[in-house]
Image (cartoon, rainbow, N blue to C red; front, side, top):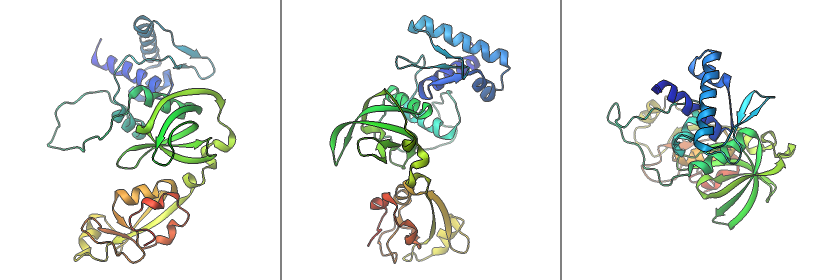
Length: 287
């Protein structure tokens, strides 16, 4: 088997594991294949899956796609951090590169997410399913919750999922690394649990960032961030605003009073954050 065909089979495996379904058009669009070639790849994968996993794949006549059920076990190894990056970027690559093309250094990952656990969660997102999870939080400790997840969020330190929490009857974030034992439950996502009812997710806030008042040479920061007349305007979902402001070390105090070289930016229109639920982690907000 050529490396190109192996890459396409890994792509089929990836979509089944993390999205829960794959169809012929996915291969056609991603690899510029003919319909006949895409059909052969799906047939080869199905036969290999039957041989190695002793299980067949369900074919959905309505969507013309193969479906992964709760028993699905991938044929290929998928690393969760790479999978999250591919899912969020929309780009697939299974090529392994052991040596950097130029000298580089990447941050150390503080925790690893078990790929099969991640697969259940991302399949639930893509297929709009409700899942039961075991969850650990600092405020409530260990609890079993039924949630309807719909998006993944990277706050710069760790990955979250955005979901409707049936236990608290509200939309909120769950840290992926605090989840265990997720599984599909026999319940449909209700209309009020759909993302278009998540006010914080759908509200867009426009933030005006400028060089911090304590900087000796503010023009350096203006140049670095390509500011327009000394202001950088950023539009964000309210649900992630606090994460982004903390990640960028933006001083959110009313008059830019936070000290330290880490604060290069100041939020000059802090009133735009009124009602944003993640404000508690925005540096200096409320001081």
